[in-house]
Image 1 (cartoon, helix red, strand yellow):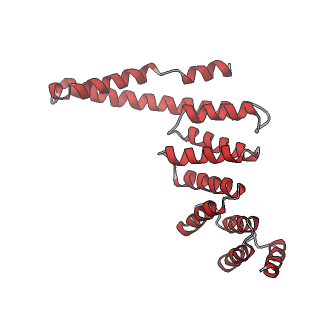
Image 2 (cartoon, helix red, strand yellow):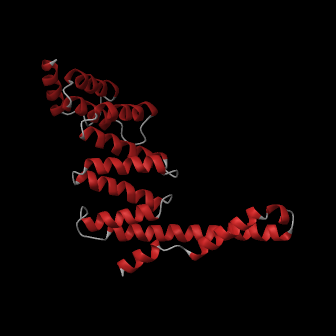
Image 3 (tube, rainbow, N blue to C red):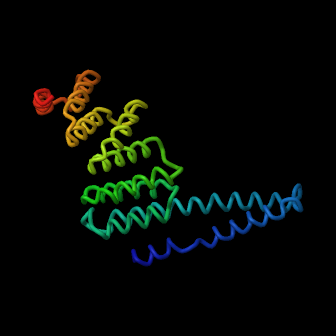
Length: 224
């Protein structure tokens, strides 16, 4: 059942093709029909039809995402990956399609496939025009995280810093830990310590300020 549906949702929608032809016809004959009842009928019909078609696409996108989420009991399985990719590639510009690509990137990162995860985050940020601010921040956090895991701190830290400068929609404190951790991994203890001190200064009541972090800071202070 799932396989046949996946095949179906990838096939061109007949109404989509009709609507495209109608709009093309109007553009080609705009001068001839301008001001006539025919122009009104074509334009209104195309708009109403497109609205109905868009709703159908959103519904199918939601179903495709639901299939992806139940494709396998293992959330990191190849079946789940393939279903998420189908939903993401098949329905760009829709909320389910965006969610599918975010989950696909996270799946790849969790499996240790960091470079492919980075690619998915970049694709989302570069190609997707319908991202909400929250979607964009999640994608940017994921991109920076994937860069940091590859030791590319010079690329990751500016992204984290930019999110902090603009005001994180999500919790901000964890970004200081990400920045500091990246500096530690690349042999820059002084900058890591400075970042943790900044966290304490700006968010003194943060639950991220643990005894473990303070011990870590003491060690970094001795390493400077």
